[in-house]
Image (cartoon, rainbow, N blue to C red; front, side):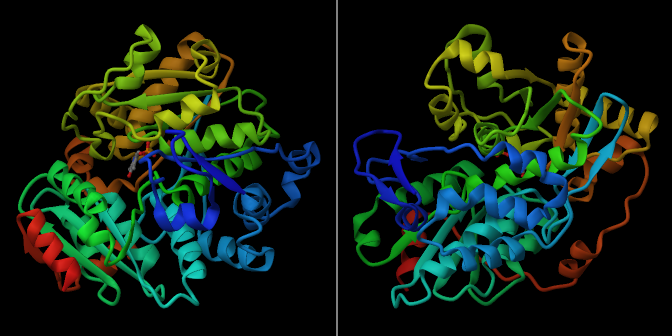
Length: 430
Ligand SMILES: *Cc1c(COP(=O)(O)O)cnc(C)c1O
């Protein structure tokens, strides 16, 4: 499959090149040249397919022929070695739990898939690739874990000192091997600015192959379309009108859901659930797209002022506002409302949700008010103990730490403290 740049100033790229480069030379995001729907029989027969078989069929066209089928089979099997259960709250609302992977955030699937693709492309290459990634918390852990031990790939993670949770910090600073953590004396925005400067610094990029591992990379973005198919497999016999509510930050996850719909998955509608970082909610009302600096909230993985994948959503709907609006609703909620939703789920359904999932739940309720017959699935994107402080404050009950988390808590942190871009450059070149 070839990919084109959404800035339309660069030549087409192979899948391999798009994965290694991350962004096109004109700084545009890559988008697949064509999307061929899967045959009807695939969806009719979905009950007889395993998760790996579903994923293999769904992603094949986007990665072939550069990843041969026998290799792709292994990649999806290794990527999906945990569960994706649906938990039903009531007749109209279910949640799809995406936190059963090694770092207990939904980003595990994309990170594991991308790491294996890059590992495959790099196996006979004597030039190492350096994955440079800024994180406000969850991305770093998922990328560190996904890329651990992958030959020919070095990972450098930048995180803001003192601004990620203890659990998150342990997840990105304790693995060793090919993973190194840089603790930045600054904010997440500073980390991201340093990464951007590095990608544009020819003195650096002429010396080393840098790539990114956030959802702008097609190999991290596309595998997220599996989730929607896994949910459909579990629900389609009981419910006909399935709607997905996706707690959204950079809009990579929801955009992948729209790709699943393009492949033929019968999804009635999408709801983008936002915290107060609500540029898309406002756009759907006013038709004015006005990014703003991000605001800090308790669902901090969604504190994004300018969602990078929204341009891919515009491309899917051919920049037609009315078509987009038929398929996408968006609501925005305050931290206060989010906490109330966490408590309500706990009291009414004995369900402990993290703040991101709670924003999703609120999106379902808002949509159902106007569309009472739908079945709304919100994606639970992180395990509640990853946001332990706020969860325990709201439901007033101590939460047991899952095994994956306990395993890293006892390990020694290893990081290098830096303050400036020159420090970063020195570190990368040394
Ligand atoms: C990254 C993240 C999100 C937002 O996902 P996008 O694909 O950026 O919209 C939501 N919840 C959690 C817990 C996350 O880590």
